[in-house]
Length: 575
Image (cartoon, rainbow, N blue to C red):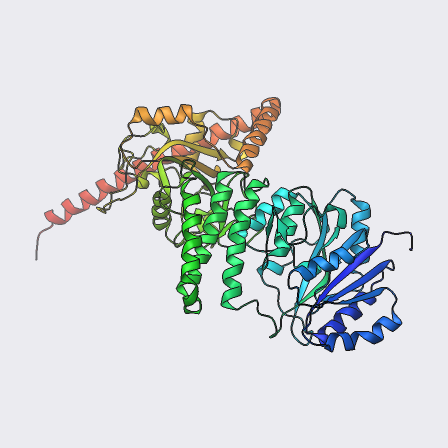
């Protein structure tokens, strides 16, 4: 064990001898033997010095230093300067280590020597050491050990605005990898977010490993000042600076990512200003908002791409928006309400299997129309209504078929072939004002695609349409590509957009199309299948046509019988 690398546990202490005793005990209890414990005391009294004397007499691995003057943030740096270990883990004087913490994390470093930090789930505890429920930032990210790409993890932190890596107690790192002093990122000293600043410095240069075990305990108690208005304002100032500096370090390289991170900070500043707690900080808040808004306005040249209702499968390169705070979701909001994006900022929308769950689809389409630019493209993928499963699904609140996009415009022309939406009582395309309402949105459909069950893949387009119109369980999904019109778009303009712009689609649709092509190829190469399926399909269609003709004859005869009966009644003598 002595041959394993030395790990320095650094404890910046301040006026909390009771909690420090517990922290020291958890450091001493580590199963990893080759450790040193450095305590730098920034206290304004002698209580910590008195408490620690028995420990110094019993444990030679503990070194204690009392500062002559209060060093504040520099006390952290002093701990680091006095350390001798190849690896370093801070331990806040009111937090705790799990006995296996250093051992588990060192195993990761020895297994992955190229990673720059190792972290884990941390448990919130109260003043008495009782567990508190997880909050969003402290939730367990994964249920198994996972290596995470540095840039991707940093982007997630910046766009969600939460330190999911953890406080200084949570992270073990290699001392030589700290190219700037702890809490300094790209030359700027951070105070309330000094841990995040250092984690971003690491992540800009390498990967991280996350362990699902609870290996540290973060204490919440009344002696902390984290929730004071001055600290909160300083924290938001730090986050704002981090967001800007991080882009220079390689994070937030896509405009939509940077826009999402800036928007998050602006929203938090607005919420802060609305609270009377921050009445004395309005000038600082307004200055921050003005600077961030200027930066965000500079991104106006590039429109955003959003994945509405992305769930845990966000489209790569898109801003994920969902009702639930799932991994990869950038903006959490009620999809039935306001989408927290500015007017005319979005160039592309993907909404895959999300709009069928919306309470009022017109309200959501109006929101999409508001945030989209002129000529933006909206790709909607939805379950096709006429299947037994979709009809029975109680979670589906909206129906989607070939007629749905007709209600999103009042314009009578479309690029969609007439045969795909033919209906005897609605010949023209646009039905947006069919109930005499005043439609205030205009989405022009330039593409509509049906995804068929395997039994129908081999049929011609004409045969597929007949089956689709006469049977259930023929199509399971439908996809539309809609162009947002906020000015004037002719059919020729729409054709130009259709041919010149890439009509992006969800990755799962691309995979589905390839899978269908493979199935069709196998079917066409199977003579027995073709003979059976073709015969059955034509037989069904022929039988359905015969039944329809017979039903028409029955209806005509019924009408004649009614007429004859009426005539007989008229001819009968009245009493």
